Image 1 (cartoon, rainbow, N blue to C red):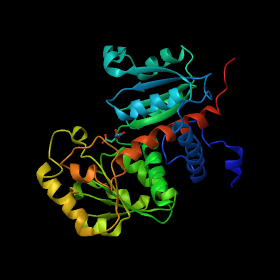
Image 2: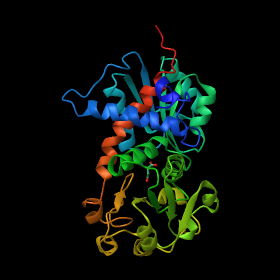
Image 3: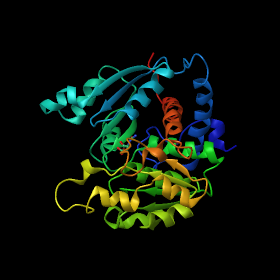
Image 4: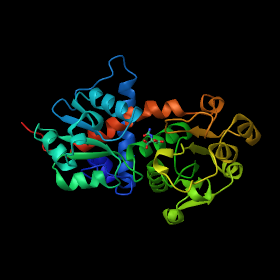
Length: 319
Ligand code: NCD
């Protein structure tokens, strides 16, 4: 056991991105998540650990599963929870991010979970306010808890992440899930490949330690795990399209049962959701025996509990 595991402390006060945390931090979150998974299997799925803290969930961008998962994680830890979503708030009246957040903090909030369309929004917040910040997705930048729950789910199914081959398929250019996953998997010693149309693979990606493929079948033959991402049409904007049509995308990069059967091996299939059924993955594959998509959702609660619990150890609790 490493020194940090013994100390049970993260090296950071905030969870802004996987790039900023260490392998030891990730392993500490995983071992804490193991304990919380056990709690979640009990009839009473709740611990009193964070009875004295208040968490604000600030969602400036649409979200279903991430918002619910965080809220459930906070409630399972007995934290007080306030929810805020941009569509019903004064943000629509022109209030700045810092003003909005300062108002919420004046209500004595200890931790902020924030999703925001601007890359760097979580870092900006961490620089301006005293609460612990968890980034729940900042534009096309990072989505650290998604990467943690993805790697945790691989570890659970395959026994380890180190040495495993993971291909991330789809819109890598616009995906915070892809970037956080690459950082997380590389830190844990996995081999990573990204696969998609040339226009959707950022040029610098090899410098992060990921291989590149434009041929799905070849990439899947190489892989132990395939993480299928959604095409982020809402981020692609107007102008020159990134590929001719969704139908063409599906023909080249969609995963269906006939391709999976042709591979004839135990490939693990993942998806962060929301799924565009019939585009990047067919229903048959998404709901089939290779898929661990619902395990990811389940593990999300335990992993988020772990991250919140460990970050709370750094807080100066108020009397
Ligand atoms: C992802 C996101 O919002 O970044 N979803 C999620 O958090 N479960 C991926 C996506 O939107 O495609």
